[in-house]
Amino acid sequence: MKLTVIGSGVLIPQEGRGNSGYFLETEHHSILIDGGSGTLRKFPEFNLDYRKIDTICYSHLHPDHTMDLIPLLFAFKHDPKVQTLDRTLQIIGPKGFQSFFNRMMDIFGQWVLPEDMDIKIKEVTREKIALTDLNITCNRTIHTDHSITFRFDDGKGNDIFYSGDTILCEELIESARGVKTLILECSAPDEMKSENHLTPTECGKIAAESKCEKLVLTHFFPEVLKTNILGTISRYYNGKIEMAYDGMVINV
Ligand SMILES: [Zn+2]
Ligand SMILES: [Zn+2]
Image (cartoon, rainbow, N blue to C red; front, side, top):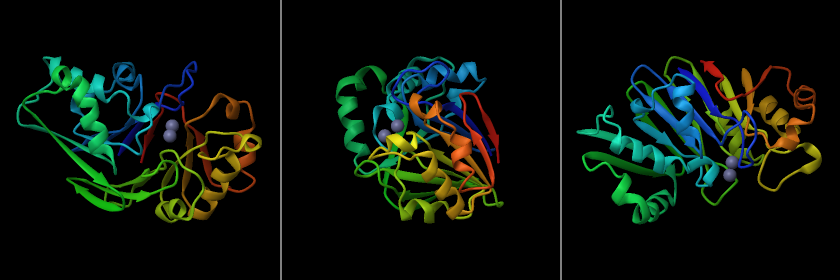
């Protein structure tokens, strides 16, 4: 599996860090994981082919994770190099996604919906989904009312866990237990503890408890980047730690 970090930033515009977006490629699937504003624009910059996307996984509905769905469909509809006939785009999202989608389509649908493409929406809470060469396990986490996490497993012992936005909670640790690559949001510095996000100390504790092989941090607000993130985390977790950046490639 090859995962490219498209956006390691947050809702605040920052140089070099865009809204949340990740692209997971296997032999048979091309999966967009979240896709905030600016995600689509980065595909050609990172030598990625957006035309291949067959599945989209949304962790929650906040705009910094979803807003490029409209530009993506608009491009699918009008890019002559996109084959839409007999094509299915599967969207896996949290409870409430269908209504969110319908309301956006009330406004934009006439311009952006490719007539001959089948869009299949699946709302999930706790569920396992089997694709051709990939298993996706969804679980709940605490951030918005229905926010979910994703664990991607190729069936050959390689897996990646993506936290989306979250706080420290038991289900998050259980869902990530023993994963090879743990991708955690690391939004806020310890001294600015937020109600909805993780701090470096919490990321360290989750990584240690889950016993992941490698921790990748992402979703940085500007304030946390001014602190010694790696120093703080290494007090709790002594495995490999990497800070995500836009364009980073993780091979699992
Ligand atoms: Zn959020
Ligand atoms: Zn976010």
